[in-house]
Length: 223
Image (cartoon, rainbow, N blue to C red; front, side):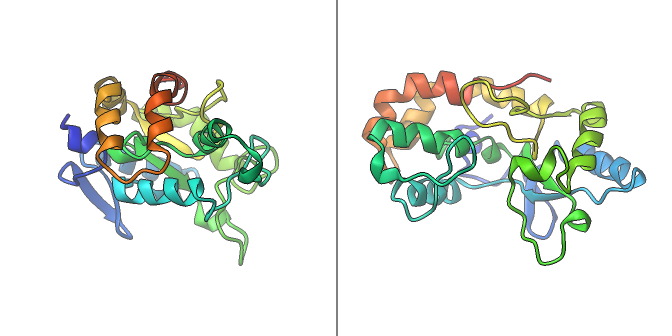
C-alpha cells in the first residue's frame, strides 16, 4: 500500500458511498452487504465518518493540542489542559484522537457507524460509550453488530480499552485490508509525516513515538 494512502494524503483507493463519505473501494461491497443485513434486522446502518484525510486529522489534533477544542478524560469529562504537563496532555489527546498520519480513518477501512433512525429528535450524535452500551439508544444496533459483523469481515479494533485508545463501540474496521495497512504503517513513515507537516507538539511526539507506536497504534483488539 502506498505511503500516501497509509497517511491519508491521497484518495485514489477510495469510492463514495453517498453523502460525500469515502471508503476503501475494496471494502465497499462487504460494507453494503453488512448494511443490507442490518436493514433486514430493522436497523438503518449508516457511516458517520469514513475516510479522514491527513489535513482533517491534523486540524482535529492541532485544535485539541492548542485547547481550541475540548479534550475529555477517560471518564468522558472535560480536562483542564493548562493543568497538565506536556506529556500528560499528549497522552490525554491520544486516548481519543489519533496522530495525523496514523489514523485508521486514513485507510478508508474504518468507519464510525450509527443509526440515524434511533437518534432522538433534536439530539446530535456524540460518539460516546453511553450512546452504544447499557440503555443507550444504539445499544440494540451495537449488540447486533457484535453478533454479525464478523460475517462480513468487520470487527472493532477498539472493542476494549487496553491501555491505549479508549473503547470505541462505534468504530468498526474492515479486517482484510486494515490488518495489512497496520503492518505497513511503520514508525519511520509516521515520523517522516509528522516532521514534514505542521503538527503541534511534533518535537515531543517524535521523542515519544516508539511508545506511541506500541501503545496507541499497534495496541488494538483482534478479529
